[in-house]
Length: 250
Image 1 (cartoon, rainbow, N blue to C red):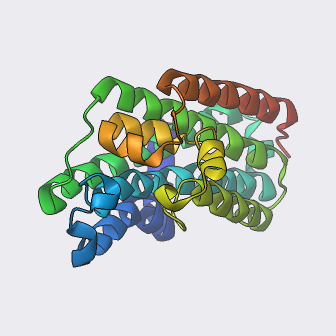
Image 2: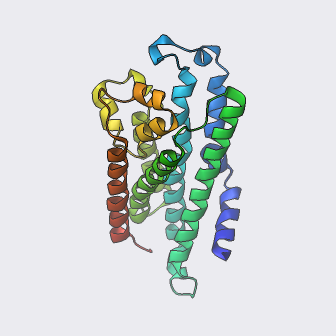
């Protein structure tokens, strides 16, 4: 419990992570929602508003930022400064530090998602996720897959600078397939199909949030929801196993 309190205080002191990992997804969605054209239903999107379809993409901004940039950077900083090595010689097991770090990071992602979904509903009238159970499953499994990838980086990089560089590359790649730079509805079917199996599994999140939006952003025929979840689960398990195998305390 003490470790969690300490990590929470350190997290809240990191203003950049709080802003971009927790608050930015909501701010981004509200900012885009201020554009009238994005609030108008379009025949090309089955009568849905572009902002309705893009909302899940805004959600994963925080998930990706925390999992592949923040967590690896913190772990690498602890290793670089010798904190993990020193803790390994004391009763304070360094594994508890890592666990506390991951728990605080997950809590921040949940807060980010809750804030975004609530304000999107209140301000932009974007309906909350329709399929509650599927959405929770997609969210948890998708984040686990992201964190697994992030922990591979955290396991091998020696400095916080290297962690930030690796995290940035991962962030750009993951968000590209998530439709942050080019809306998924405009992507070629091949890119969209690949994106359905790239963490955090945005297509599964979108389909769980809105069945109509899921049909629009999915590939022709669509991939079964539970197949996408199974793939994310496998990625999470394999990535976590690799990270555990490669992890070094110093």
